[in-house]
Amino acid sequence: MDGAEDNSLNIYKICRKIKRTDQSLYNALRSIYQDSLFVSEIRRLWPELPLMANLRCGLWYSQQFDDTCYFKSTDGHTGNWSFNPIRLNIHVATIAAEKGGCIIVDATRKGKRFPDSMSKTIPIWICVLNRAIQDFRRANLTKCSEALQSTCSEMSNVQDCQHQRMNYADGNAEPNLYQHRKAFVNKLDDWDCSLHLPLWVSDSEKANIESRIEGWTKILEATGTDLMFLAKSLRRPLRPLWISQKTVIWLNEVPDLDSWDFTPVILVSASSSMENTKRMSDDEYSWRYIPGAADDEESWARVLSPSLFWKHSFDLISGGPEACNKMVADIVERDRVYRAQRGQEALQIKLKLKKITTDVINHLEEGFNAEFQSVVNTEGRFFSVERTGKPDQHGIQQLPQGQFNLYWIGTTRLAISTSEYARLGDGSGQFDSILNCDTTSFLPRNGEDTFIHLPILGSKFDRFDLQNNLPSAVEFARKKLERGQTLLVCCSNGEDISVCICLAILMSLFDVKGTFDNGRSFGSTAVSKWDVRRQLVYICNFATNARPSRGNLRQVFNFLIRE
Image (cartoon, rainbow, N blue to C red; front, side, top):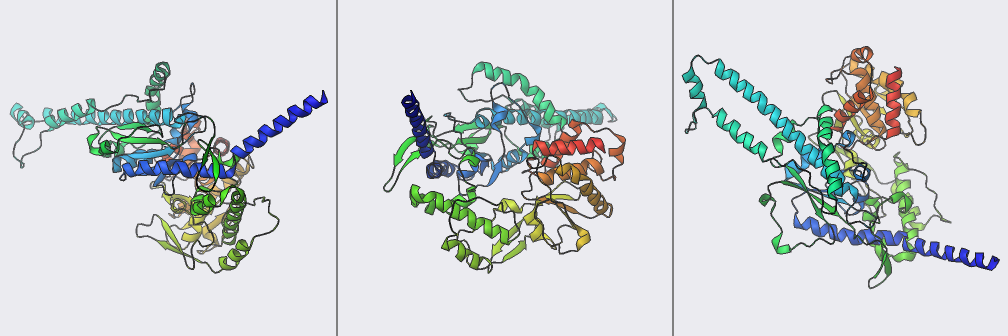
């Protein structure tokens, strides 16, 4: 009996060992690299279209993306379909309108051709936006018709009114408003607002989704999202197209963008749809292909980021399976030390290394000789960072351009960015004061009275830290805004805690129109969850990378209802 248990236990251990071998770090990175070649091929078909990564999985599949977006697969799960106004991704529609379309990259591990984010979440989003834009245009058309009717009724005689309706052929005469209205109505009737889903979605599921579209459209319109720019710039309705590794594309028949009567949102599923791993080999190494290898990066990446991977992709791939784990550990440690030297966020990582390698020691010596030079461009939107000395010879991670975004929230004199941006831009004149809620601080250049450091932990580490620090943050903002100063709110990534603090400031000190009133409207009305969501949507219209966590938003709401 004991022998049988030992045999079953041994078989169990063997199966686990085989699974760990198949899901190794090298196999994951090699699979990502293999799938990135397919993404590059698709991008070459439409080089004029911007390439966007659906966070976070999609960010691994190309060395260079033009932008990112955030569509969750859970919003497309069967029976759980949703349109979330907090994740509006309006910048995706704006970019598609300006460039004539866009390409979005994502992947899945579940043996499907496309993740639910592509098969349902994005098509739902597209349909809701198209209908909201059509409703906006119809509302404007109604206002124009009423104004035209009023103009005609005020005319002194019938002949003047008939004269207004005439169709003038010469360019010196006034345009015919009636003909213009008729053409605009015809264009509205041709605007495609139908729900486009892939063929593998069942008819019953499609019907269930369609029955909810109208309600989601009203939710979008009720948030106060500014649709005017999209209504003016989007000449053709958005429409999704799906491309996977099984899609057949005749290279001599690739359609031109102008030949389509819609604005394409091309959804590229980077990985193959096989359910199990597949043994593959090249001239040097044998490895197993993992579909959707980049999914759930916390379980396999060992803190390696997409940008770090692509900086060292050649060495990691050519180094082979045996050296991969140690190379990744060295790369991550170099980056951690590099960030720590400059006061950036550098989490302590437990590495299974007996000693620091010679490369790390050499990096420490050269790291002190590297200096940042911050340059503000003429538009005052982005910082570009250059480094004197030898760039990236020791695998130093340069911060991606996205970390230097500064988002001004309308005309509120509030801005959101990363703490690294604030550190580099302090003293540049872009903003008068800084509210830093990162766990690490820096010495202010404009004086202590223009700076406050509130080291706030996220809800995963402390469920009440943000709520406890919000009174100090709002009071600091009140003093600066009363003087007419601009205020930058920053955190480690510029996506979560800084957005929540800015939300609390707007709710506490501004009215519904975004005008600073020092809290008068806040004190006279009761705050509901819908009010908080509406104000968050207002912030997301400007800070396109805003992704506040649910736990932090709950702390903001609890703070507001207790004030």
